[in-house]
Image 1 (tube, rainbow, N blue to C red):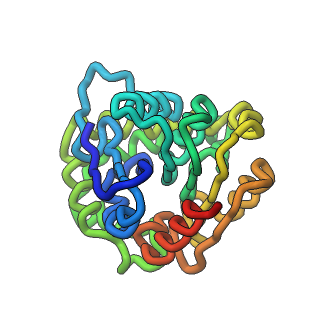
Image 2 (cartoon, one colour):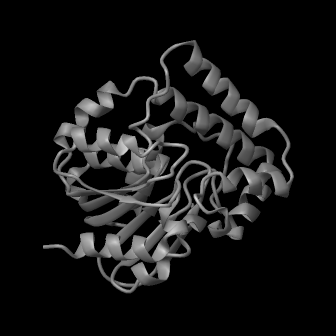
Length: 262
């Protein structure tokens, strides 16, 4: 596994969403690293991490175990952590399994609060996801598709476009993306067990949501607040699915204020 590291202090794990990589955090790492030891992970099969065919890529539970093994391997006894999209769901799952590890948690437009229909429509969504990943794209199409994650497409980062384009040309990376995306969609067909477990979440939680997120509608922030009444919820106006890229300064200020609170 590749990870980016910067700064000193209490470790701060940064977990990207499914389909992204550590490039998702490049605009905020320098400032976050001024007060934390930042570790931005490339999850297996994404970014610069290996994508071995022998790995049983799965959904949130699989990536939750990866987070646990990463923290154990680096002897990270207590950390803060930020998880975006599918990475946010995997982070919450690991925090439920290993509550003593986490001091404070931040989730950014997280998966796990937008249900996939548990019927034929849900099955169709899985099939469409596999097809979407498999169909050939050129860089222009990749960029146009990625731009839909932003309220203001001019704010997207070209580093991620380059990486998405490269991964789409790599058979192993496409297999990981196809498998992982399908597993996450299927997991979200039955969210009740996960939601019931959330009542036992111990660390303080901040949820950041873009008001114009087309993937996970901001009304899901209300669902999160209902399940986690002690969580702090911040909705960034005129912002899409990637606040850390589209509004990096506000993102850093909000996260640092939350992490430094008594």
